[in-house]
Image 1 (cartoon, rainbow, N blue to C red):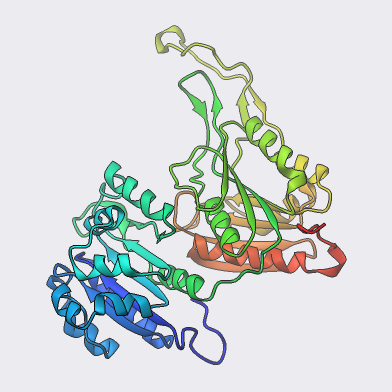
Image 2 (cartoon, one colour):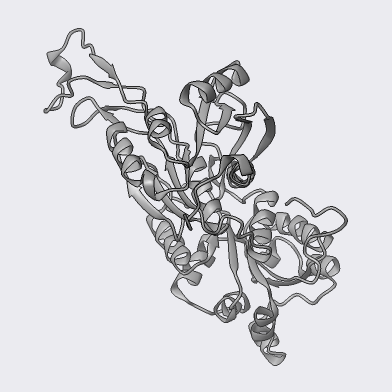
Length: 415
């Protein structure tokens, strides 16, 4: 969360913090302290299981308020209704798989799930669970149901888990949760009127009906950009190669597989757009003669692929545009600024987002990224490692400054 100079950002805001029975409960204590530091009034509701990890007294001392735990005790003061009605935002962190299931089904058998049904404010859920649970079919369906209802569900992060496994299940970093709270309470609508066309993910170029050439792109950066642009008021179309990601709500999604399909999907929508953000990692080569039938291993002693280059989508879009702001990406493994500047010139784009995919903690598949932004005037902006959703807002900020440059005369939705 970026604090406003001169003071805390959440003065006068009321946050209802729900805590469920996860080993990550101790992180909710730090989150509570951060919210109080930002000036928020925080009420805490805990499940019985959560109290097995952290005592209610800890939250009471730090919040200065009684912790709601017992549904029947809370019922006497109607806290299961008054607290969510008064809240500006409800945050459940950590949220277990059990809580996600009850929330998705609308069950209300404890004080926290009852409050969830009574809440009319924005709801943010930050799950935490052990390896393999997050991708279980039941959990995936519950998360999708919540997101369809407008609940912000933050994907957990990958890393070492309490069980000793390594996988996706760690509670989202505190800064991600705080950024989501700030976005819900202090929404920016500075992209209202813009129509943003975004590409994301890899492409897959078929070798035969089974095999293909692709790359390591997860699509996370492009999806974060789509989510951020939509949250800030833009109309968004996301042209995406194959990924395992859940599409952001309120965004038109156009699935494609090959570079040629992506090129066609972007070209046909170019005239609609006012801004194009080309964050996809398009394959540079494709098999010249893909096989109609699956290659059999025993039939080839020394198999070889006859490759040909795919089309240069970014250059083609640049040549076709009629006033749109064009943002390109450069995934590099060294000499970052030199390569990025060269791409900025040769592709004739307005802004290049360059990142070193070999940098520890960043790059393909990571929930975080670091980037160097270079615009047509040669201005260089460095952004250190941060959540991709936060970096998406940084990129949009830079693009918005270019859109507002009088000399550019940008195309807008009203034109």
